[in-house]
Image 1: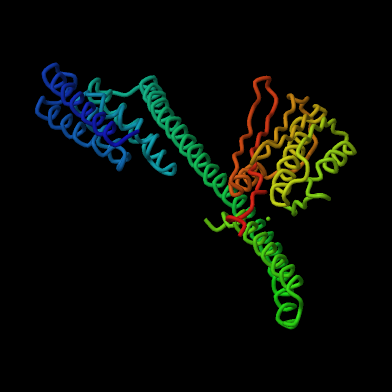
Image 2: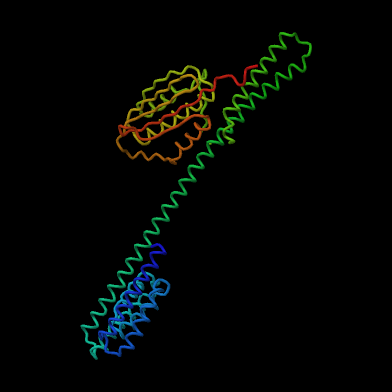
Length: 371
């Protein structure tokens, strides 16, 4: 309960108890003098403001106030608050104090306490304390659920961040490997020019053109991957610059998956092919895990400047395949596509199945003006 609502409720209880005390003093609810009734009722009403911090004290004072004034509200609130807020080891003390207040009023009012009165006092006490304990249990369960929900949200955020970091690390490794190869070639050809100054102009021009082309390729690779600064297994491009999707499909079909492959891209730059390969690979893995037996349609199309990948499958029959999954594969995949400058989306299809859609830039334009 919010602090403001707590204060409002406490104020209402105190005011209500004071009104009952006034009625008790004027109506003779107790056999003791009216002045004692008023003093006891006022004290029992005043302590209600600390019923959460000092529930045992409130119950004890409320019991005495009821016995002397006949105003039941301080005792009722005290017993409930004792069950809701007192330590479990103090519940017996709360119950004894409450029973004593109820029994004391009967004893003062009637001059005796028979067995029936004692039993009724015990039942009323047990009911009010039990209601408070139940409220405390509900409060604790609600707090535990909220804590678990917050913890799950934090863990989900950490998993997603770890997936993004792993994807960035993998792309950084790819950048290192590719650029190391390209720069090594530049160094080798530059060294050849340095040790062969007498070579003919044609040979020098050819070597210079080769160096220029290799450097341009290295810069292109750097431009494609440098987004990692603003690892699953590597995703090699297939022969001829393709994404080796046929190999992925063949592996999936050997595992019992039904896959329809529709590809029209031609040779792709290595960087684009690697991203396309990863998108299809992750989509087939998820379909195999979450929709076993459902047919999968893979469609890859190339248009000027980009490649569009769409993988769809209808809802499959649930099956316990006991396939482990971190739940972060799509997060890492989205990060890879984003770092490549593309767009990624995955979610439920209108027919209840699943759809993975990615648009990957096709970096085959020359870097700079080509001069």
